Length: 156
Image (cartoon, rainbow, N blue to C red):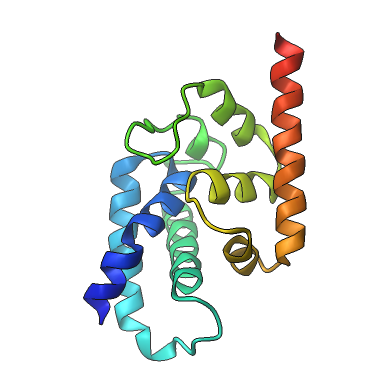
């Protein structure tokens, strides 16, 4: 069962973590840790949410723990300054500028944008992860997208 879950969700968990870390190697390491913790805590999964939502919750906690343990090496601001090489991500972003604009957004808009564009999660899944409604998630994404378009048009 765990092997099937890994096959089905490891790529999405990896992309979720990549959106946080902007580092492929670190995202891979944290993905492995996420599934390790999922195996240890599988008996606590009650089925109140989707498996992906549960895994992303674990991944988010793994990432926060990593940041806490590496605080002296890596500040929260420095954690996202480098833009990841997105050549193997399903979305095709040629413009580093768009990623920089998203990174400059305040939470939770930034998180919604990353989860939607990089992790390719549905609005319902994003809402479950963040603890908001699907409608709130859609509106937040739309506003974030509007802000990006406005910034790009302003620079042209």
